[in-house]
Image (cartoon, rainbow, N blue to C red; front, side):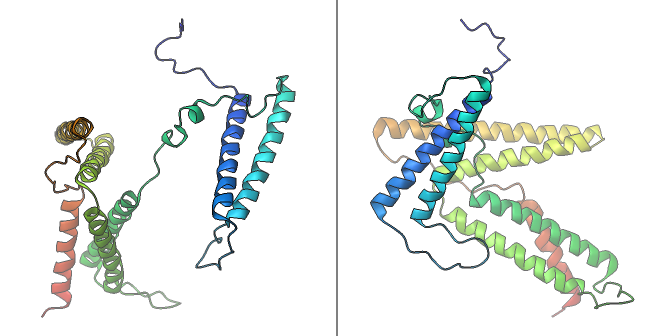
Length: 279
């Protein structure tokens, strides 16, 4: 019986065991790359397009994976000698993640395109807000330096930043249109989590109690909505499992936490355009 305290977590994996499991996984990757080469054949190198290193051909990927595996196996043997451990072959190494086929399910999920786009969109909103406030306070012409090139006027800067913002808005709409109802629900849940993270940051920064109550109220509201949507997703999964049908639910309109800020941003730009470019 394991008598460790409930909050101690799982026992620490020895460093040598970590190396062995890594070697086992690298060996699996090498076998997969080799199987792909055998199934699809050799590949002609492609010319480089744009910046960065060109993609490896299948035969280069196999060679690279083999070199990496051999170096790691050498490290394993060296560590076994240092720790006085008996040598284990790749067949003898036991890796639970490989056995349970959960290698790709551990750790933090990589950001998808919508997540990356949301980040860039929010950054663009802030950039447009900042330049709008600069124009309101300081005008469109920055003070020229004593030497050097005359700086770009702030209206031109605003146009560049606003065009960037419109690009991310259009991309978001395009990506959301391709989502199924369930994926929209999952996106909505993530947006609520993102909004709560923002409120928690504000709670740590804000000194006035009246704002604390407001932020806590919004966090509670979002958590309630998250629970509601999660239950809906479970219900759809259950119906599909039981009936074998593609059961969906009523399509939702995604409520984004930055929508209000985005509308305010559009209004600021529109007012400045009306002021400096009256019809």
